Amino acid sequence: GKGNYRHFMEKEIHEQPEAIAHTLHAVLDSGTGAATIPAPLDAATIPKITIVAAGTSYYAGLTGRYWLESLAGIATEVELASEFRDRDAVLPEGGVTIAVSQSGESLDTLMALRRAKALGQKTLAIVNVPESTIAREADGVLLTRAGPEFGVASTKATTAQLTAFCSLAVALGRKHGRLSEERAAELRRALAGVPGRVGEVLQREAQYQRVARELAHSRDVLYLGRGLSYPIALEGALKLKEITYIHAEGYAAGEMKHGPIALIDEKMPVVVLAPSDGWFEKTASNVAEVRARGGRVILLTDAAGAERLAEKDDHVMILPDVEPVVAPILYAVPVQLLAYYAAVEKGTDADQPRNLAKSVTVE
Ligand code: F6R
Image 1 (cartoon, protein in one colour):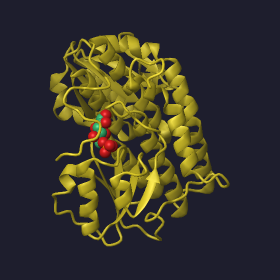
Image 2 (cartoon, helix red, strand yellow):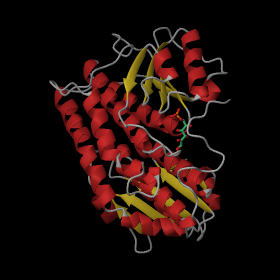
Image 3 (spheres, helix red, strand yellow):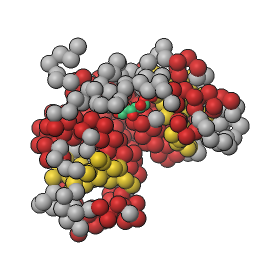
Image 4 (cartoon, protein in one colour):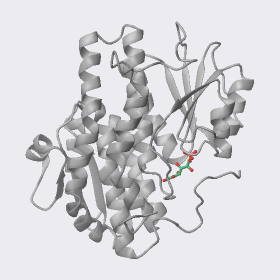
């Protein structure tokens, strides 16, 4: 049941520290602390990884690409399952396709997995439901341990997917000699700290509730992020639109000047994801462009970022400091809270949004 929560979504948002911790526990070897690399990713060389998924799982895949490239040095492509399944993709021999799916039943993702197999790829499923069709059909399985998710909008399964991707990329980076043992150990410690940091975000949720009340009365909302925060901007926009029916768009911060900047005026809230990382300075200059056009800035950052960037008219939400590599797992949480509390304010049913099903088994 929902316990003391109004919605499954609220409950599942609050279950994230355990979902992440359990996923880490399942992925990491208890002796060495290193992640076990599931077949077929344990091959000596991997010419390319192709990630196929839909919706939120696709955004987790986009984040996974940044990690697989930068930590493991493996060429990675991410594809919408519904497109990939009917495309003439050209994939290298020995390539690995990863199908990412909470339910393990999304038909498009299943079809993309079958297509990858037909193209001679080895396959891995990252799923939350062990007995699902996608888990059964893939050559290897990496289970996320979020526990059953009932809210139609995915929350704890998403952060569990991100956790699985990041741990996997660290392990692959170590195996292929891209990461020193020292750096890998540092990243594992950062991952181990994420459940606690997520708990801190949840303790301070009243601030998200306040800002969400304002978002709930907007017609459109823009989410901006760069690098590792870009997929989380996409995720934030999807969460908001699916449960509040407010039009929202996620954009790569640097792409804003190529079009969406035309939309910005005093009525347009712009949620900016800006942890102090290698992309921060560039994101900061995009924030200046938003302000110059009167846009209302809602800043998700850390203490150092707020010090550098916040201005008095902004809504500023300060997240705990974390190693920038693991920041997307943490920053996924406030965008869920903003969407959830905006839905509560609007009175829409966060658990059962109109026109949506928990697992999409149609084309
Ligand atoms: C959004 C959401 C959907 C799913 C998508 C894929 O909050 O839940 O976008 O992520 O339908 O579902 P799975 O991961 O079960 O394949």
